[in-house]
Image (cartoon, one colour):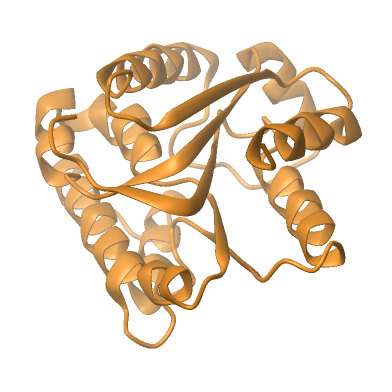
Length: 205
């Protein structure tokens, strides 16, 4: 899967368990880069597009679909997220923006593989890789504490499920270790300001 994969320069992806702080870092890094004069397109997956809105309804248990259907929905949303001519990732990169995404195909490998197998999800996600994958490493216990105030129950909650997700993340990271993508693992227990500073230090080299 890693052979002959396109690496998208100036594309940065944040990954980690729910509660690891990816959204916080998306906002902090975007603000810091923009204040230094960079043009930034901040985005997320599921995408804000109609395809992503449908997925959010599944994740929030408003509608029910089979695991393989959800995996295919994520892949379709990712294709739209990348190639949408009005507001896609490729469009913004071509306009010389830095693009930062809260989650990307690595989340599909980690989460959707639970229901329909790693190989199938891998085959559905042969998309370009980011220049930087930032993985916020945090235990399920800490993530659960951070999210304890959240009332909404989602599809992949539960400590045993979270441990399987971590294993899938590790498998996904190993899969791309020779791809040319730069993978940065950061201790997610550090203060958010310190994490942001570390990320900025890496991507500014």
